[in-house]
Image 1: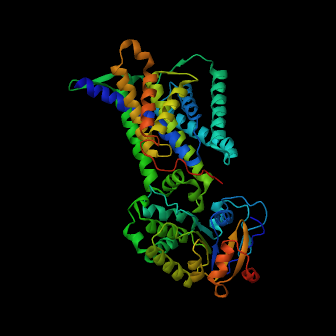
Image 2: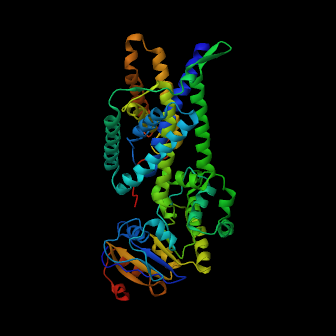
Image 3: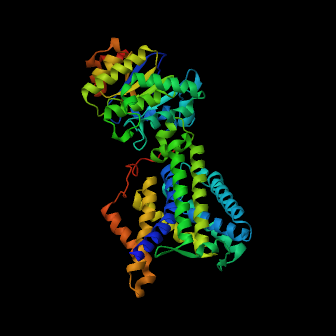
Length: 297
Length: 225
């Protein structure tokens, strides 16, 4: 029983990271039809900011990482994606690939290809026991941070006019514009929020891995894409649900797979996603907007 | 579109009639800035709207209720309505306007906390029109507001629209039903294959004239142009 609770905490913690990443990806997709591959590199840049700031007070490190990644996300919208507002989803995907490679190669040129160890959040690696259940502070911190961020974001999306505008735009972008909602403002807000979520993932990942590398965002964003698709592209609750399911799937396969097959865990997780997709082709929470005409202008 | 020219005078109801594929919806989308205009112009009260984005067009006073209603299914009725507040500068005026619109469509007040996706087709259409009214339009363009609704609901809906017309609202309505168009419109345009094939005051037209133009049969009705 204790073991199950420990695995459950592991799953919620890992699922929380994927849920935050998937929400960042899903928000941008819902509003502008862009599967932003560069989201993983926003996470990576946040991690490098933490690396550069290491040694300073934790609050300063976190604030700097958040500001840097939000500004990067806003800048990518203003200087990269805004020029492609009328482009197809495929073109936008290629543009996001280009941005992703650009960011990775800039980091590669500056810091080299070898992973760098980071002294951040090492205190959180200690474990403690409640009753006879052993759990790590990092898992609890991850779960708490995910819960706080999801709560704040939910309040923003449901209680504020800007949040309602973002939900409307994610649901039917053209109709939201026909009601006078300013497209560029909503898209910029979505990039800002996705930057904030990417920074949160950076913080959690660096604390978990203790190292940064220029490709560290690639696998996370891959999981985030899958979670977003699994939950139902365009559905924000679906993205969060998909993130948690992927987290649970990863932990379950880690537990049940024999030692020899453990290195192929990701293949098993992706295989399970294929099965899910065959059963729920529109995702778990479909908002029926996937095939809508994406006339953005 | 070829040589299409449509005028809607203040406080007038004008119906645009035509078969599927005639170009009616294309006209409404081009007017509201969703589709680009290759040539020609869209003007409202003498001011040019051509080339403006949809959000700018609605700010200048032209509001579109597109075909299919397009309410935000996951948002509540109230959230759907307050989205229109962004167009208004004065939030107090918006509050009183919201109350007034809910008096016109009382079902929306009853269902204010319900998700729009759970409303019936008629209720969704009322929501779509109410939302457009809240943008304070000087010209309300509606693309097939009766589409998919039961006859009794259509009748109720048109009663409300005619009340709004008596209140001075100017409307351009895309309609498939020739009978209904003749009943409600001050003037009519019949479109076919991207052209206006008949236009005039509804009082001067018969259903037979409309049918001939609608189905592309040449008749004396063309003289009315």
